[in-house]
Image (cartoon, rainbow, N blue to C red):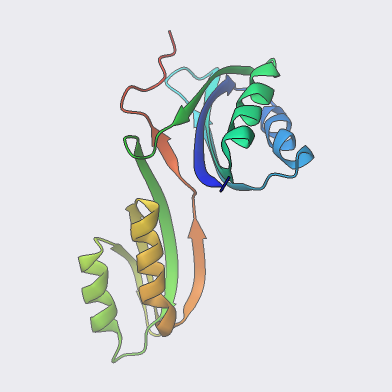
Length: 165
């Protein structure tokens, strides 16, 4: 069975060491987390973790079962990325010689990227979108020379999001 892209939305108590306990579940089983985004919800005592990883059906089921055993885990939802609302943030600094700035800026406009800084030999750009569009933008920029790149990882909610009750 082949690995698929998995996205878990996990509500946890907003307390110290919860992140360490959750991430250690993955590492103890030899699973690599592709991205992990965590932040407070509308209730400050509760945080939402969005964990992405690759795994087969067995791996997904095991991770949900293991997470559910943790005292600080309140709710778990396996998001269907065909229907979930998701975004990722990319900040990228790219080399841009004087003659290249125009074409990079024009392409950035097509990708709906924002220009954060124009320097003599570089541009710093921001793109908020789904992963595939971000990957495409990175591929476009590679020939110019990426100097620095930072991604947040996926953040997502289901169309019928987890209710805090």
